[in-house]
Image 1 (cartoon, rainbow, N blue to C red):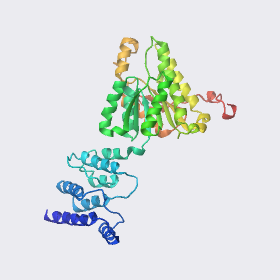
Image 2: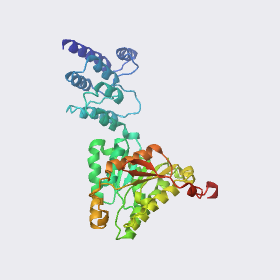
Image 3: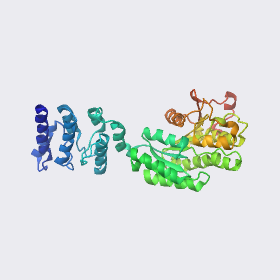
Length: 390
């Protein structure tokens, strides 16, 4: 233990040199000699802050090499991070290891710190990445407060996306967003009320999202209902809603309008590619979603606006909404006893596959035995007009 203490004192003595005001070339040279690098400890970091970090590491059994490595990466590289970001990154480090101490204003390299401290800090990598989300892609998910939509939001957040939770049930959207903010930060998750049957709501949705995040990369048109006794409402929500969403994406994300392009994913259903006799209105609306996705997913639109379109077609999904609707409106479709129904988490991973594969105009079937792309009949493909015919 005495050896460790002696080493730590050496580090503190070296840090004292680094904390001296830079009054000339000699002070700067001393700092470079200590680090054997061309970097200096951040001038905004007090000696007390550095000692707090060293003390924490010593108490947790870090050896001298680890302490030295951490000291070396507590540097001010004078780029990329402002003071607020430095504070936040350190805050996440201390939060990850449940140390309630004064948060020092240091900059840490997350990759190197994770290598040094990963075995001591449960969930450290997940938390430290929160401080690196300022340039992460942004996704809007309609119907995002519950069911499949909420699962999609969760999966995207895990992948580093920043999220706008859009839902007609504003209180549920805000509640869900606040819960996710605890893990991912208030600045990385927002909630916006959106009635997808109103084109003006889509405009407000994009404008508020752009105002907060300065970008939109992905739109998931997920909001939907199964309300067979009201076919007009069913078509308005399930088909007209995504149609409005696609037009809004072209306007706010399209390269022809100054955007950066992106991806639009429309949640359809297996009922969008096969007939379902008991719910013809629902099936028709979902067939329409597949049709509009294929139409927007032609080279004509991509070449102009740089937006990929794809459809997600899940089979029976185990959601509270589906259970309630099936039992009350279409009892014959009650899925409570089915053994082949899928979880919302399994379904949501289909969105990740679409984002990874980037196949324009594709239709992904999400079924119990996996994820499969639906192939259009070869004869029908010959009937699709060429770009020069449009």
